[in-house]
Length: 307
Image (cartoon, rainbow, N blue to C red; front, side, top):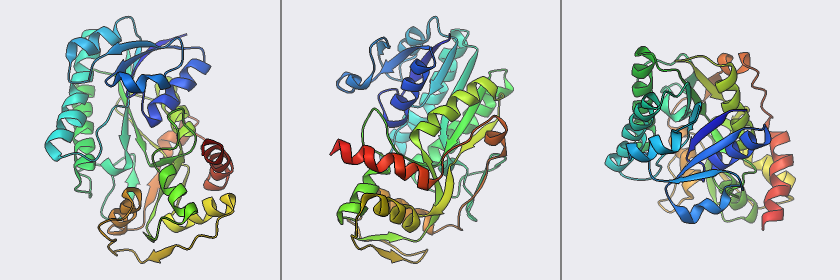
């Protein structure tokens, strides 16, 4: 049994990971930035108030832990605010872990941090991301901070997560919101962009595999299937029993200013080449994610039950 410290544990992916860790018999310390969101944490999780900007709070939460899962991230804010959280915050986590003698860290990154203009998402990526939004830019910066720390001897592994959906203790968040919008007819348009998709539960399993079987300085791309936004949503609608219309726009198209936030990601990816994924590292450590068909068979009944 291992004691882990988790940042971002009250979020969509973090809460899913914490449930897996507990199910596997581990114990968890969670850094809690917003106490009102801590209701998602199961009984037995040790809660520590603070943020990743506070080195003292980080060390307090890490005391007695063997490993750290760093999932906390900022999305949708200004470049300055996002950099302070995603880039500087990651540096703070690494420094606190080093000071506490933490054995190993798994950092949650994104396919957006390593994607090329041609759409390639590769564990061997070198250079900058082709995306220019604050989240993508700062997640790429955070990876550079990590590789510098690895060169100094820290054991840090990176999980690059593609578009996540599916059941989570936090409830219907992330791309589940796009699924619901497509099924209830409130989503009007989407760009025919090809991207990676993965279940949140499989992301959690991938993180634990990276901790147990991975290696320092390695990336692990966590992807269940590569498919276009329209295909992903059509599978969801079939499982839902929805005949809601959906207008499919060609790659490179723009969407209206009031477009659904997650539909807007189809516009972003539609400006790049069709996504292809190189995930040999993840597969080598035993990552065996479910495809979209199996994912929707799990996700849609869960979402309907939550209505």
